[in-house]
Image 1 (tube, rainbow, N blue to C red):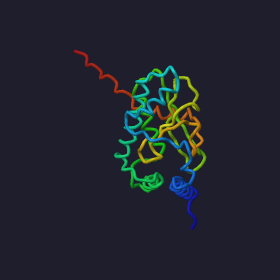
Image 2 (cartoon, rainbow, N blue to C red; image 1 turned 180 degrees about the vertical axis):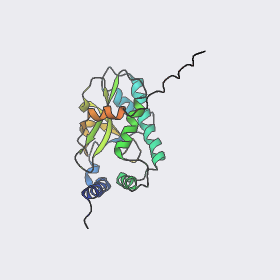
Image 3 (cartoon, rainbow, N blue to C red; image 1 turned 45 degrees about the horizontal axis):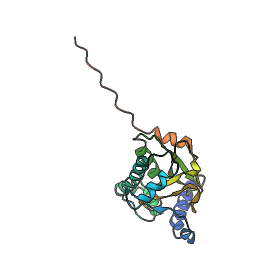
Image 4 (cartoon, one colour; image 1 turned 90 degrees about the vertical axis):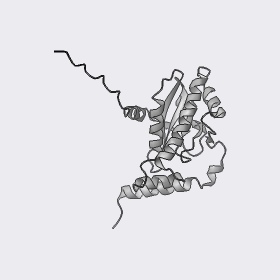
Length: 201
C-alpha cells in the first residue's frame, strides 16, 4: 500500500533539512554569523547601522530578545541537532515544538510586546512551496525595504541565534509575507477586560 502524498512530502522535507547542513555549500562565505551573547556588539552595531535614524538602545534590545528567545525555546522544546531531526521528533509527537515557523512566531510575539520607534519587523519565508520551507524574522529601520534588513534565525542552528543580511544568505532566497505577519500578531492574547464594578443597591 502506498503512503499518502502528505506523508511522503513530510519525509522528503525532513531528509532535505537533515542533509542541508552537510552540504559543501555550507562553507561558502557570508553564512549567518552567530550572536556570541545577548549583548553581542557586532549584531547590535549591524542593526544600528541599517539607518542613521535607528536608536542604538532599540538595536540592543532586539539583539537581546532574539538571543534569549532562542535559548529559552531550546530548553523549553528540548531541541536536538540537526534541525531536521527536531522536525522529525515534532512530527511524531516526541517534541512539543521546534519547527522553524514556531521559532519565528515566538520571536515575533516577544518583539511585539515592546514599543519600537525606529525599528520594524517582517515575516520572511523561503522555499514556501517546498517541504523544506523556512521562516525567520527580519529587522529593518522604520520604512526601510525588507531586502535591506537582517534575518534573525533561531531554528537553523538549534536555538543558537544566527543572523545576516537578507540578500547575503547563501542557503535561502527570502521573501516577505505581510499577511502572515499580521496573522501571527493576531495570536496575541488580548488584555483582560476591567472587571465590572458592582452597583450598590
